[in-house]
Image 1 (cartoon, rainbow, N blue to C red):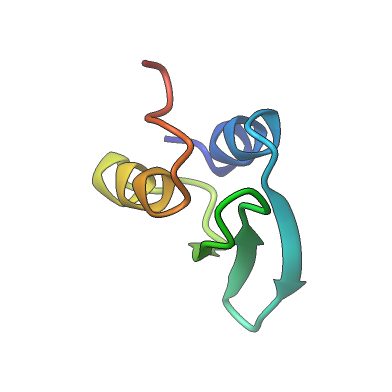
Image 2: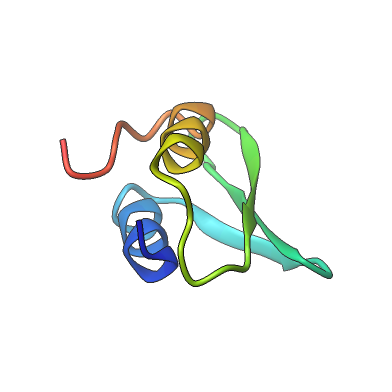
Length: 63
């Protein structure tokens, strides 16, 4: 999955960027308080994208 598509999905579900790290960005879901690291690669493996979405409680992308 493209990183831009994942970030768009996270924003659509109310998540926001907390801070940028060296190789990852930290995203937060304000409703649950959950935080997940999103790697800064153009392409993110689908399995990792699902793990990030489940960790943030936003549902699966494309589904």
